[in-house]
Figure (cartoon, rainbow, N blue to C red):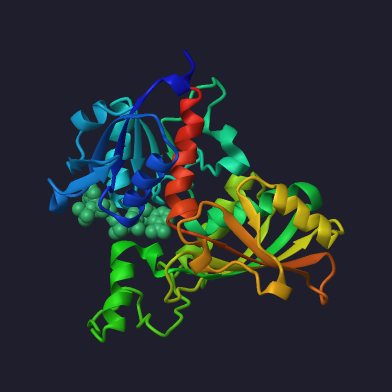
Length: 339
Ligand SMILES: NC(=O)c1ccc[n+]([C@@H]2O[C@H](COP(=O)([O-])OP(=O)(O)OC[C@H]3O[C@@H](n4cnc5c(N)ncnc54)[C@H](OP(=O)(O)O)[C@@H]3O)[C@@H](O)[C@H]2O)c1
């Protein structure tokens, strides 16, 4: 019997959140072989009805007993909940795919974007890791386009500026924009400053080196996923008042010369990438057109005329889909082929 004939019990920790709800949607859309769905959240949401495949399931709270019923546990409830519950779920026999930052840089935990390093899901013995980390949303969309270019031209340095959706900060981040647009200004802003009509170059907390934690995630996670500690990544991450996805302006310096048409066709043929690049038709990626899509969209592909072997490009992906839920479900799909 192939594993695709089997069905699986899947727990979703964070099922009432933006990512958790998107996970449920993606599992349905991709027809993941779910035998039982176990929606979990905090005690605040206990009993809240969570829709899945036309039925409604009451949200429960995490416990060793509940994870003992699960084959796969998709976590999206923040780093604190992951630190507390991922070891418990793994011990109870579930394979955990964790969306938080809790284990991403743990050398024992694979950090996976299936288009780039799907094999990392499995250890040398061919068995899946008990905890698998899902990278940060801004990192995921960037490595999906960097991978085919790195293989062909060897990337030396990437300068990246992000334009990140308020939904990257969950329900609180989305609701803050809606409240501010309605004229309801809080005493403490969810995005540090007013986000309506603004751009805030401050995502997560500042580090001693002057970069934010979000920026350092892009540096460290990219190196781990690409398996190359020599990559120079120079990021500036910015929150902007949009839904639908994160945009990133990339300036990529290669070791080898490149050809623009070849770059476009490499990207067009790369898994998970869709090229939208026709300035004559005003065609380029945007958050609104990327909303609820699974691909990373690439456009504005052009040479940096002022620096040798260097390319400029603009990419957009839905942070709740490829940046979180879709990537986690793809990891689960990779898993079930060998579970
Ligand atoms: N948003 C993104 O674009 C994105 C992208 C990549 C990764 N992530 C990561 O995914 C996680 C969730 O993000 P989100 O945007 O979905 O946030 P969210 O909308 O705020 O949802 C948070 C979820 O976690 C649950 N939760 C919080 N504390 C909990 C606890 N102690 N025990 C059990 N459940 C708890 C919440 O339950 P209640 O409803 O009961 O409070 C809710 O279901 C975070 O780790 C985030 O860093 C998010």
